[in-house]
Amino acid sequence: MKKTDMSKSDAKKLIGKMTAPRSAVFGNADAVAIDRREQRKRDQALGLVPFAVKINSELVQQLQTLAKERGIDLNAVVAEVLAKGLKE
Image (tube, rainbow, N blue to C red; front, side, top):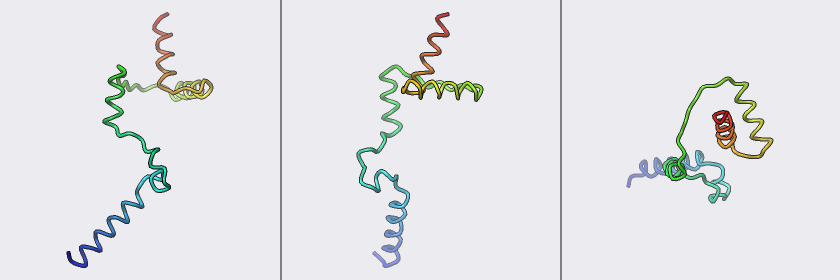
């Protein structure tokens, strides 16, 4: 390997460390999130389907506030509100 190749390799390693997530840098490698493919498989196993909608920002704020008050996930709040609305 040439000296320039080694320098390039070292530079790539350094850049990789600089762009690494902070959790991995500070030794919290256990806190690394699972990849998207794995998350998609888990969601499919639970019967969850991605559902994108465009709604007014005021409604989004109300949903986020409700989720914070109850201490649950925003997805759960939206599912609950939709279920209640569809029952009526």
